[in-house]
Length: 222
Image (cartoon, rainbow, N blue to C red; front, side):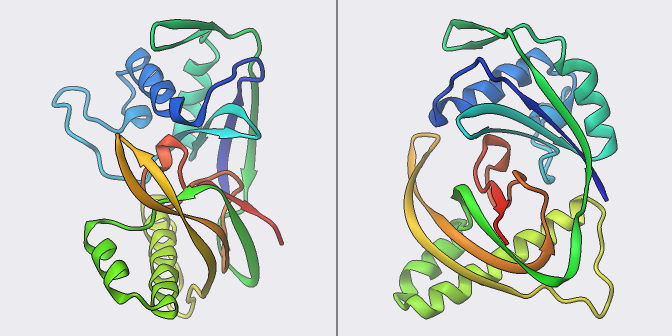
């Protein structure tokens, strides 16, 4: 089981392109808490780990999501103090906040679960991006994406201190299509669609790159 907290801002309306600004504002507001911005407070260096606090749009509502007991505890203490959000010098009053805290299942399962990406998945890095383009073969590209999804799940598990037993193997199938994504002013290939795996992922958690900014958010279908 994994503890998850989700804070909804029902009266606030943001565009998908503003989520990174939303995250930046909260990170500056609570800069002493590295779980929010993933940078060392003293040195400014990036802390490489699976983001324990993620910012996203869910059904067009801005949301901040936290996972693990420690992150949920810190998150619950500080986030309810917010009464405004500042985006590009525009002050947005926060009149309503809805906080949900729950224990959710996470990890290996014997059943096959189908998930959809509700925001584009950024699975390619500089190295495998070139390999993906050069292959030019849809079957090979699909196989590569399948391996990357599996790798994302293993990486997430490692940082969340969850370890598979020796006889447990993650099996994955993908049905994905390319989409154009603008990240930090650069156009990138992202993916929408579905994947099937024998691994339980809590709804609205992200996998892949830039999950703290809302990319790669998954939701269970079957």
